[in-house]
Length: 91
Image (tube, rainbow, N blue to C red):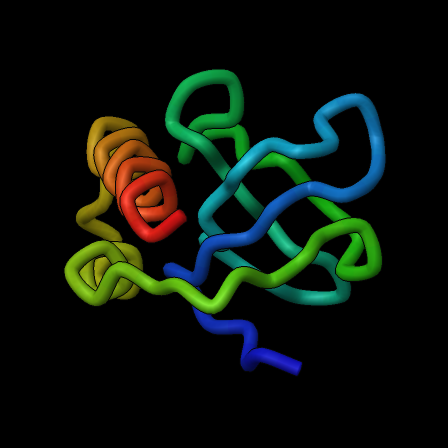
């Protein structure tokens, strides 16, 4: 299992948002994820760990910003967009 660290990308596998890509911004008994659009830094989505698939991708710059509390929604959107472009180029 991939280690769950702030800044790691995940995909929702259950619920109405199945297939959505999120960035993990916090964790406790559940994960707190955001996409920068509908689920923002100010109101992240709480997801059960069993309802997400941890992706083997992490944006180091984004991770540093999250840990320093300097991240904003534009950073999250930009990172997810770059991830999706990266995935399309690999396939």
